[in-house]
Image 1 (cartoon, rainbow, N blue to C red):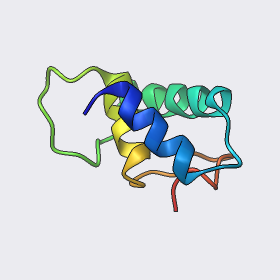
Image 2: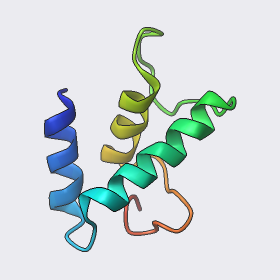
Image 3: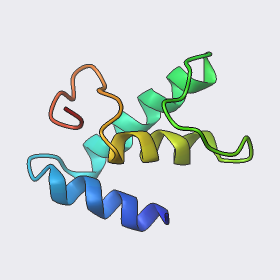
Image 4: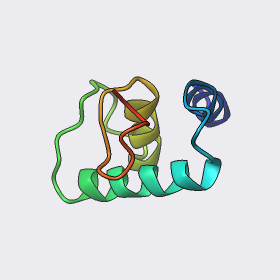
Length: 72
């Protein structure tokens, strides 16, 4: 799925969140993945880490501390 579609989905499902908060959440999850966290999705190894983080947040598979409204 395209990044734009995922971003729109997340922002539509979380009206109290803005795109800047989403960017911070994606960055935090990306850092976690780069530091050895296991992905909640079964995707190709070629998938970029930031895209993977965005997909996980869009599907509600992860909650980022300080952003409890993102994924429940």
